[in-house]
Length: 508
Image (cartoon, rainbow, N blue to C red; front, side, top):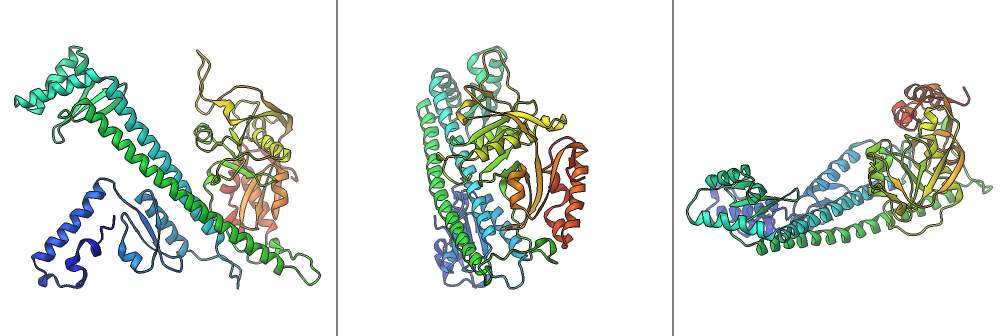
């Protein structure tokens, strides 16, 4: 769809600066026609959102339609499945470009983390769009099937309206007659829940689903219209799936460039004796901030000592979301054998990778089990150990046994479980400085080797917000650059990694 001022307004293309008093009927008609052609696809939702960047990677525009002018300028276009997504990315990038770049003096390291975050964010938006497309397509197809499943009822309603309109009966009177029939318990009338006089349509409720029907057409044509719409939406889904593969390739290319840069950087940082040079971040007067927020940080999370991502729910809604949206067949599901425990998912692959079978080391499963126990009611009850189990994703279900009820955030586990007995609770919270800077928390064996400094917690007397403040003060005492601690590891961020209930630092 190349409906642009250049392609839609040929009469004005060569005279963009034409004075309004010099314009004539030809220009006005061309401009009006262009606006009409722009208006129609936008109103119908037939958009092709684009984000445009210049050759330096800076964003220059976000548009609901493909613009020939921008490509003629040499701008690079990135397709989005929604204009809102393109706009969100546009303003996010503007904020990043306006922010001060926190790098060491003289550093020419590209912002790989920013690029990775950008592509991860685009992939998340594309995945959401794909889910929405499928849900919309299934809804439209379901409506068509309901029409056929209630053929006689729908046909009677449409026939009644057609005959009434032939007799010149106003729409308001037709609606009133259906309301009277519904009060008398007439099934056909009860199904009619609304009439749109302007559109000439009737809304019929079938199996708790409202379906807009054009009574001037038969049941078959109304159903065909819905089937066609479902097919059109699935076509958009296929386009989004192709786009997401392209984005994943771009993401992998950035990660590959980052690995190559870091390998070269490690070679250069070796001294004359071949020993690796290590920065003393605790003593640095100014620690460079390299932080970009990850989408999964709204959950409880950590990376195992083997690099696997583990996610935990903070509440019932997040438990539901993790299982329904982020758990893949090759992942592992963990849960403490205690009430009030979070759903814990050990991701076998990165969230932006296709699911595949992966051998997960025992060290990672043990850390995931410790994570599940430590952030459960075991800690809140002041206990120092508890049991946890792990199962395959296909053993997790929301379908209860007959006569039973499943609370929100809870699941039915069927089949054999692998138990982790007498798992000790344990949480370490630390500040990581390489390759990015952030506060992290989780099982000590996974956290402590990767951070510049850390504190270890056990169940104790200090409330969650109080222990977070104590940890924050401890970190400020350890770092020469206290402003760095404030930016990266505020008390609020530290509290996100503290278990519910009382805690104490082991060195208190």
